[in-house]
Image (cartoon, rainbow, N blue to C red; front, top):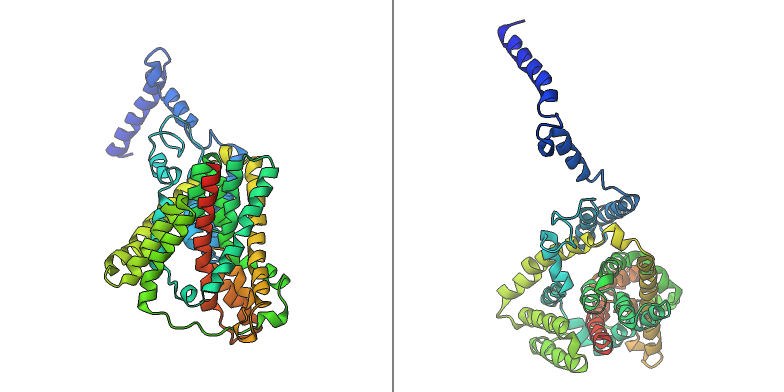
Length: 410
C-alpha cells in the first residue's frame, strides 16, 4: 500500500471513530447533530409528505402533457397546465413559502393575475390582435349562431343551481359551456374564486377535446344532405368596415353588458390595433410576445392551483360533469339554430348546419372541426371561412354572457 493510500485510510479511520463520540452524541450539540438534521431533511421531502391523492393528480398532469405533445390537442394550453399540475402536486411541508396558496411565495404572486382577473383581459387583447372579423362582417346573420351556442351557459347555470351550488357558483360553472378558458377564469375570479381551479381546468380540458366531443353531436343533429350544403363565398370586406367594426362592436356590446368591459374592451382594442394599419408594432406585440407570456403564466399557475387536497373533491367532479353537459348543449344549440334559420332562407343562402357547432368560442379549433367534418362528406366543400363567423361571434357572445351573469349575481 503506497503512502497516499495509507494517509487516506488513517483519515477515514479517525472520522469513523470520532463521529459517534462527537457529532452524533446527544449530549454534545443536540440541535445540530447529524441525525436530527437528517430527520429534519426527511420530514421536508416529498416522500415523507406523500399521500395517494397526490399520485392521482400527478398522473392527470402527465396525461395533459401527453395529450398536448402526442395528440397535439391545444398544446399551448395543455402542456403548461399539465406541467403546472405536476408543480402544484409535489408534496411539501408548509411554512417555507413554496405552495401557490402560501402568501408571499413566488407561485402565489404569479397566481395573483388569475385571482385578480387581469390575465384574461390581456389574453383577449392578443386574441383581438390575431382575429380577422371579415367573415362575420360579410355575413352578419351568422352572429346568431354564436349567440345560440351560449344557451348552454344558461342551461348549465340552472343545472348547477339544482345541484346545490350557490347562484354565484352556478354562474361561474355555467360559463364553461362557452368553451372560453379566459372568460371562465375571469368570471370565476369574481363569483367563485374557491372553485377557480376546477372551473379553469374543466374549461381548458373541453377546449382541447373539441375535435373529440363535437363531431358525434354534429352528425347526430344533421342529415347527410345538410352536411353537403355549399354556402356562397363571403363578400369582400372594405378596410373602412374592418376599422369601424371594433368601435361599433365595443359600443353595442358594452352598452348591453358593461360588466364585460375588461374583456370586450381589450378584445376590440386589440382588433383595432391590427386593422388600423398604423399600429402594427403594437398589434405584433399583443398577438405574439404578450399573449405568449400571459399564456405561460396563466397555464402554469392554473395547473399549480389544482393541489390534490383542494382539487379532488365531490364539487370538482360535479363541475366536470356539468362542464361536459354545458359543452354538449352549446354545440347542439348552434347546429339546431342553423337548421332553424334555413327554414326562412332561400336555397342560395342556405347555411350548412355544421358551422353552427363553431358558435362555441374555442377559436379556431371549433371552426376547424366544422371544416374537417364537412370535407369528410364533400372534399371540395371548404367551410372554414364560413365557420369563423360564428366562432368569433362566440368569443363576443361568451364575454357578453359573462358580463350579464356578473351583473346579476355579484
